[in-house]
Image (cartoon, rainbow, N blue to C red; front, side, top):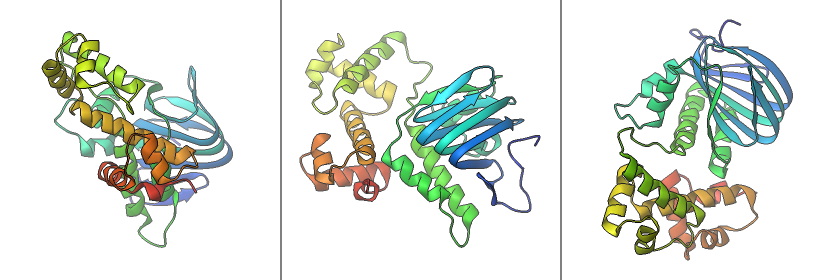
Length: 282
């Protein structure tokens, strides 16, 4: 095969063993068990690899081990995949991503497209834990229906891309060093404890600045308020708990800092577009 992508014209949905071609520029591997494949890649692409169970090695001149969920960039090079377990790998061609280019420099897709202009054999550019929502969407992608498989799959793939790319922290290139330092210090502090975070006054003191400046620079860098960022961290933590624990919704809500289950569920739905009860591990 001269390219990972078939450049499909006459058919837009094709299953070949572990491989599923959704449409021109989108391919995924749904692996159950052991799988070895040499990929000859003549297209610039993004690869999102998810290990639900087992192991995954991706190798060119060096080896990358994916233990959870990683994003890779590859530009016109060969690489080998060795998987064993329950593995999902999504390949997205640059010509597909270009449909969604944005004029904003700090958009994840534009960052990825810019990265694909470099000569990269294989590079891991993002590692994020696997959460319940990701598994929920993957299940929708891999589930076959009686009709309109291609359009259903493509819709679900875009939903998956939006979710995984939104986990990437994007910062404007023209942010000055002092502003970036203050914002990053605040972020690192909040990451340590988003359930019982310091007050704005305490956080400003820790960042060696005043409250007004802290709130201003944080929003400038991360495009959200400090409170909004704390809420985002809490909901992300809940997303991971929904995947890995046997707690009920009320217990998860309290564990991430919300007293009322109903309020927590509404915030979760507003942020992710799905209620936590739909993601709760059975």
